[in-house]
Image (cartoon, rainbow, N blue to C red; front, side, top):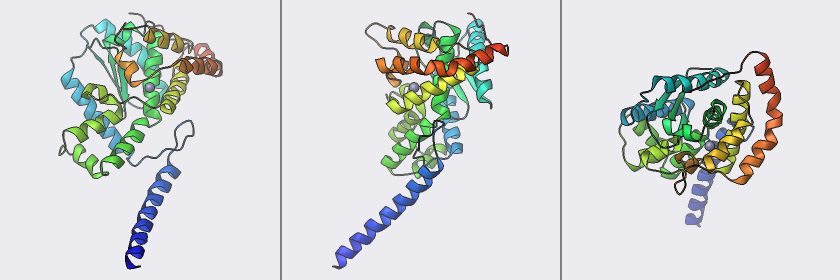
Length: 272
Ligand SMILES: [Zn+2]
């Protein structure tokens, strides 16, 4: 009887803790598209992680040498970040793998290799808009929260942020924020996260004055790239036929925003 009571009080305690964690987090956070999210890390912690990961990238991979190419990428990215607001650091990496990423803390990385798939300025805007969409929807925070829950809690994050933890746990967290492939871990985004990033990306590119139809062309190019070896970006942003259908169905909703932007004189023409 005693054991039974003891057990049930432990269960009760756990249930209560879970209830409070769950109700606090789920009650307070929802994605820009209204989906409830379980997030136990703060924006500040995510921003710190993003900055830390980005600084590491900059020490590992050289920056692009061709200033014309850097200007081109900035010509595309600046109108997008203007729509979002805040300060964004943009780095073009001299790296032939087709990849691009955005991190909490206002960081955007573009590999030179992505230009093989993103053949026009609007297609590059679709890539970056999608990436920024993941950040705005706090997808990294969601994934890091899951990883922390599985690995034993928030104290691991403190250790990583204060430089006291390296190795597997650190790599798992870095993979969570969206830098996995750079750390040798492939962590694809989920289907729900992908469609949210697609929709936010469409919104951003349209408001910035890039034709949203080009998002579909981008995914077609991406799919036809690489022969036997799929592009790096596709391995963390799994695609399927329904993605293109969903994008096509959504484009009419965002065309008016694109038209308004063009009418206001926002119609970036970036060339390289
Ligand atoms: Zn994605």
